[in-house]
Length: 97
Image (tube, rainbow, N blue to C red; front, side, top):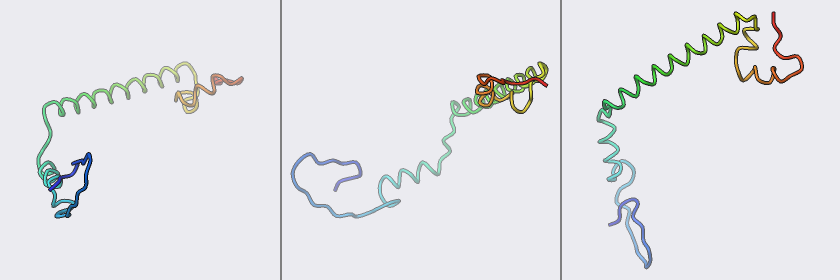
């Protein structure tokens, strides 16, 4: 009997399929891991860290937008970097209000 992932280097062989899908050993392991709670202290700390990074990026984006608006730049067209860089390189550039 050969399990999934078994390889044959040389010779001949014959096999009979006795189970597929969830009825195999791999399927059994999949069911066992799906039913259990896999949150660990590390994954919880990583989730908290990810939330803090998200908040920091949002605050920096708001600060960048506020500074741009206080300098008189167009809020919609000149505050978002993917739109801003082609405009800065164009002859007209970002016009002030």
